[in-house]
Image (cartoon, one colour):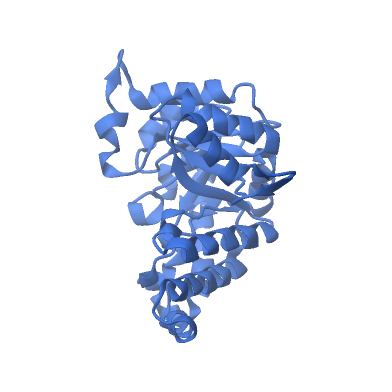
Length: 308
């Protein structure tokens, strides 16, 4: 799957992943009103509004981007109806040829980790049959509990030719409370990066490992150091746009081949219609605003890379 991700990036010339992180406050009134008319102001109504929102967004941007990253919490908050839409969104994006990164941030051990891995990336056995659960292409993982929490996922990924992105240095302001702590003279995030390299060393695609890292755009100097530590690991870069990251902050996350990183933007794209820059397009044209935001983001990143 890492090879498909790279092929999609090269085809679109857009190292961009769109975070499908819907919230009801982002969804235009025409969609919520229609859904509530059909299902009432219920969990089912909210889920239907999210589905219609996601579908229209994907229909308008799938040809411009290589991948999407639905954040499962935004669906879980609506209970079982929300999870049904999470799965429906995954399936629809895969039909459109997009790589799906399930932003699940799981991190447990033993049989629990095995079950998470099977449910999100593999197949579960039911009698003599096997079935995919959510069937994402990649998952994000938290490594706090060590290799015991990661190796069950790697086992399933080997079987399915799927991949992982391990949290190394995250974009949130308080990430340094733990991640920047010095251990034997090195910050913790560098020790995690070293483990990412080890986990991925014998699990390679054509040029990059199936085991990647999450490194926030809000810490470009750390990103530069981590790029050198993990030359064969693809880096998922959150923090662009709404969290303050810009194209010029991203150049060191990429290798000399112009690959090695994929940059996430969530509300900066899916809620572009609520930004001053795109407000003139109107709420009803939210998906057109999202498409223009993708075009602008692509140009910002490519301009930065050309000047690298």
